[in-house]
Amino acid sequence: MDRETFREQLLAVMKRKDHWAWPFFTSGKIAKERLHFHFEQEYATYVRDFPVMVGWAYVRCPIPEVRRSLAENLYEEETGGLVAGSPHPRLFLEYPRGLGMDVSRFEYVQLLPAAKRYRDFLDEAIRHYGWEVAAAIVTIFIEGTKDDGAVFDPSTAALTPPLEDHPLVKHYGLAVKHLALTKAHRRVEGGHRESAWKAILDHVAPRRRGPVVRAMEAALGHWLLYRDAVAEVCGLQRNGTGQHEVALSSSPSCHSV
Image 1: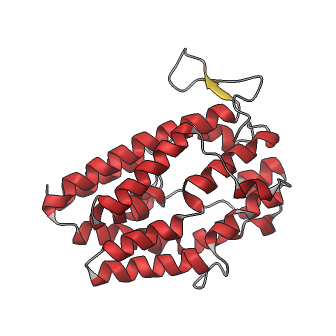
Image 2: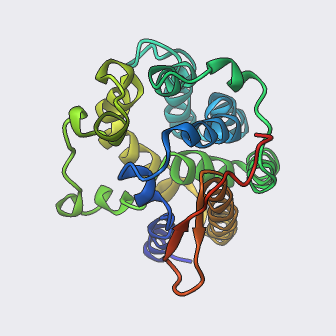
Image 3: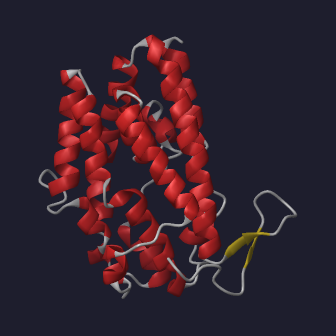
């Protein structure tokens, strides 16, 4: 597989990292009392342990240039010492804290079955599928979005709205001061995405490009099912008349999260 094909196949995966339920979260249509399910599952599935995931990719990588990029990422995620001023997992908890949620719940999160399968896949891929897969899953898939194509074509980049228009502020009354993690991400986003893609495209050997793409496809499949489960527990259901049509359920479908 040549470099251009590799890039296009990775971008094709990322373009599909787009869940049907997300517009309901960003438009304030999820009941506030159910948002804790979303935050808890995100936190326990990857946010809490993301620095460790970056660390696994770092220790497995034999290429100094890639290791340096991963080390910088690890240091910022674990300490916030470059930009955020605090560990990123800790700053994530400012979202639920600012919304008046019981943050102690985050110490004992029970993963939904689909979330557990996604997390199990991440652990397996990052620890056992080679440094190339580990780095791609961590820096491209987990950290990236459906808009990663803007790394290569800045004209497609979406405008960044003011913090006052953040969905949690606009629809749920979150004070802007609790968006410290969002602020940090905005400060590093452009250069961070470029470094991630450069590391993968420049240093993954041609014979390893196929396994990386396949692992990314598998990650996407698990992620979509995980987000289906979160949507359901937050009160959303597909109504069966169209792929992206949903209907609000009348009661939570899970009480054990």
